[in-house]
Length: 81
Image 1: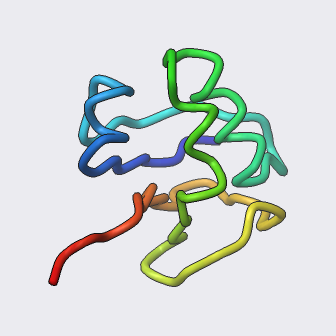
Image 2: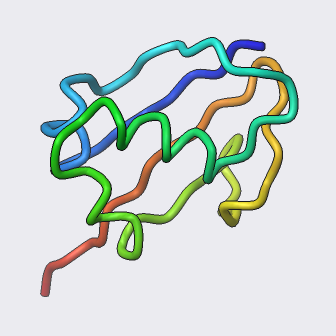
């Protein structure tokens, strides 16, 4: 199956892309996707606790299964004032 991954801010810098299509095994979860990406990008693994996922525009937890055609946004912590 194929999903589109969107990365923002520091996550974009570490991954080296803002948007990318990835081929994944059927039934892959968001946590599985994160593990794959963390294996490809130094420094990414330590950011898991502060990163949230959105699947097709709705917040989702790591156990959420992905489906072909999904769009996954990796959301870093937001600061500001």
